Length: 72
Ligand SMILES: Nc1ncnc2c1ncn2[C@@H]1O[C@H](COP(=O)(O)OP(=O)(O)O)[C@@H](O)[C@H]1O
Ligand SMILES: [Mg+2]
Image 1 (cartoon, rainbow, N blue to C red):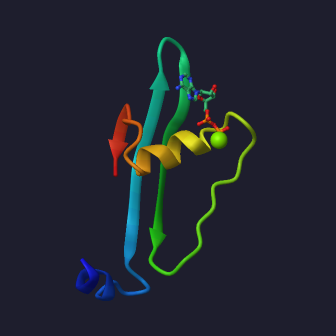
Image 2: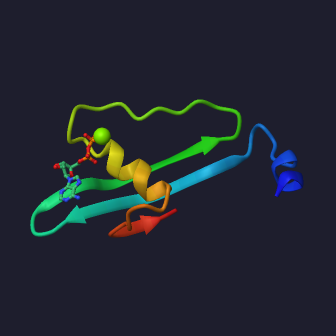
């Protein structure tokens, strides 16, 4: 694990999100097909008003919530 972390280059994409969608039935689309990537060594921020879907997005990346669709 440690050795693997040492091998990560600054320009490596360490997070890749494509078409991420989360729906809460019956009628809430919390995250509507968002795509982004994050490079190693960078600072990335999600900005948006309450209800924009920030927490849902982060908690899907953390494995705490399951996506409705898209690729991680
Ligand atoms: N567990 C949940 N069940 C149903 N709706 C939810 C749940 N969590 C969040 N939502 C709804 O999803 C939308 C996005 O919420 P959230 O991800 O918490 O946004 P943010 O963190 O940007 O404020 C809001 O409409 C919120 O009410
Ligand atoms: Mg939040």
